[in-house]
Image (cartoon, rainbow, N blue to C red):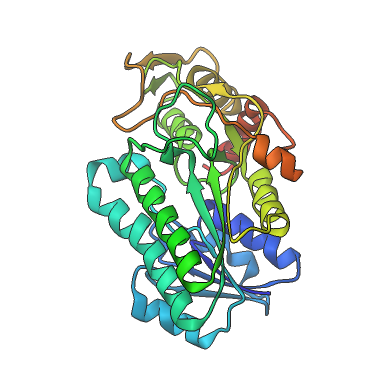
Length: 312
């Protein structure tokens, strides 16, 4: 297949590009490099089945030109604002980078007759819920990022019905691993590099969430794409278990090769406004489809901390 991959120079996108190329597909990566890095895809630039276009995905005229030049079979849409804290401080970020990028991709697909879309969504669409998160439960996001993703899901559903498209919507957990540009592990390790004696921790350390390694995430994305056959397919994707912020901090200290680091908690039950301090997934749908992750959450964090520590 010939695939358009938006956000393809980013943390997750670049790993997905590697896997798609390894599978024999041709990939056109579109990224504005606001969060993505050219270094993430440098090893693919000489590949004749790979092309990189630096452009703003929310600009329909520019994106349409890419569609016109290349005859795509499918779009993997990952471009979005993935820095939830930044979006909370400036609402326009998630309007333009999370929702409008999706609308522009959908409209370009409609105009150029592309019928298949794989979309990177998030657990943030659910908001705060005491029960394990299940695909058919109420969605009530508390972050602007979650709102942008849920709005995107709604437009994707409507486009599928009105323009005979097919979509695979994957609701990601916290994804970690090499090439990360932000997130709790990245932030902790960067703080430790700056001051090895102390580590400021947002919240009380009891926040507990599932973490998934980027390699498992890519496996899950492609598995659902290849096996789910409905017009509109929506799946939670995550690993087993969950990990507290306190445990992440300790694993990061170990990965940095440090001892006697003072952990300094801010004391609230969450890291920032819009943060969901605890959640778990109901994975029965994707398990029934036939997929499960290779690692549990804490093993994932331990591996990712070592990978990111070697890159910072």
